[in-house]
Structure formats: structure tokens, C-alpha cells
Length: 55
Image (cartoon, rainbow, N blue to C red):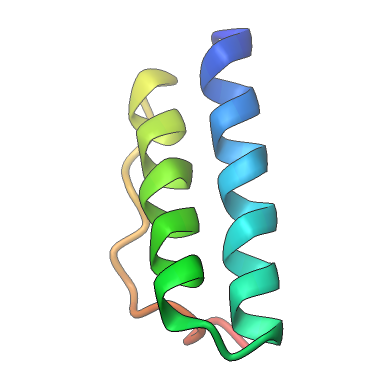
């Protein structure tokens, strides 16, 4: 796992959660995009579920 990929995944997850909490769909989607970028860099599969569906 790369440090850069892990940072992207963590920052994206935080942005995604904040976007969900603020009911800001654009922010949540941007966070998911960044999170998936990091996951792909680390060789993981991207999250494909709808943002906010894991509650």
C-alpha cells in the first residue's frame, strides 16, 4: 500500500462522510471519487454502491 493512496482514500472518506452529513451530494460524490482513486492506487476495488447507502 502506498502512503499517497492511503491518504487519498482517508481524505476521500472524510469528505464523503461530511458531504452526507451536510446533505451536500456534490461533496459526497467528490469524496467518493477521491476515495476510489486512493483505493485503485493501492490495488483495491473501488466502492461502487450509491453514496450514503452503507448506513
